[in-house]
Amino acid sequence: MRIVFMGTPDFAVPCLQRILADGHEVPAVFTQPDKPVGRHAVLTPPPVKQLAQERGIPVYQPTKMRDGTVAAQLKELAPDCLVVVAYGRILPQAILDVPPKGCINIHGSLLPKYRGAAPIQWSVINGEEITGVTSMFMDAGMDTGDIIDTITTPIGENETAGELFDRLAPLGAELLSRTLHAIADGTVQRAPQNNAEATMAPMLEKAMGKLDFTKTAAELDRLIRGLTPWPSAYTHYHGKQLKIWKAIPMATAHKEAPGTILTVNKDSFEVAASEGSLKVMELQLEGKKRMTTHDFLLGVKVQPGELLGER
Image 1 (cartoon, rainbow, N blue to C red):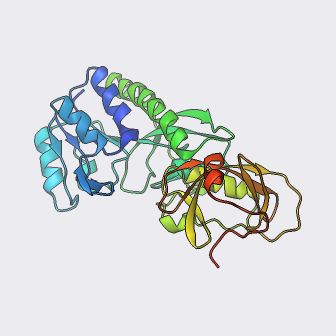
Image 2: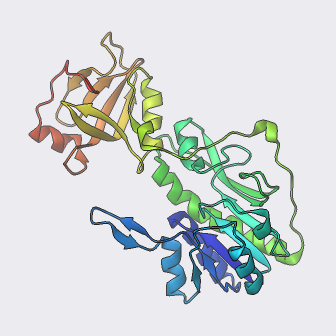
Image 3: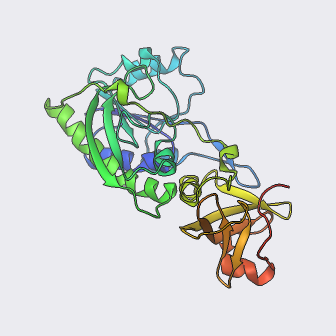
């Protein structure tokens, strides 16, 4: 088939690779504009653009989707199908109406659960045991189109959102391949979503990462893992921001105030939560690099009874 691809981050790259490997024709790729990256704000193309350029595929990076320009470009490109994977923009009906075989989306959850921008992270934060990827026919709503197919996978007990991203991306590519095959040979089936079962996965914000130790250790652990690698979870130590990259929830019984450092050993320290405690294994003090707690404690004398958090 002749397929126009829309996607932006690393998660979308395996899907584009699989489309090409399966022998489909890709006349163009649409992706987000280049963005400044790093301390020196170097203007950097998104991963999907980098792959497209390596394969000699024309790249479009529109800033507007509703002024008719993109719809006109798509009509000229004349795709059979439009594939959208983590593009980062809502497509108007005028665009969805262009390809005769429809617009297909690969979404990082088992729809109708976790519609929205951050399904993988919220699945971890909310303590889901099972997740997966869904292929669907797009409509004008937010991830509300008819479901075509799914692949499921368990979420690991200690898995971070970043690790889950890395596992789901190739599963999405596998799902897309068999979905496009079904569309091409006319065997594709579709099922409406049950809107009564829908949940949302809104965009993440940096402020979400502030650790509230009045929550349970299990809740704090899920938040830390769900916000790794971005925007990351943090607290404060002696007035400086302290990111917590890895911690183990413990069933420690205590009577200390939430946020109190309970014990310190050479490899870790434990922090009181409302229920249980967090054994901090990897962290990053403001102005320093990410490191193990063992290395951190070689240079910082943390004491039991100290409090984490803003004072």
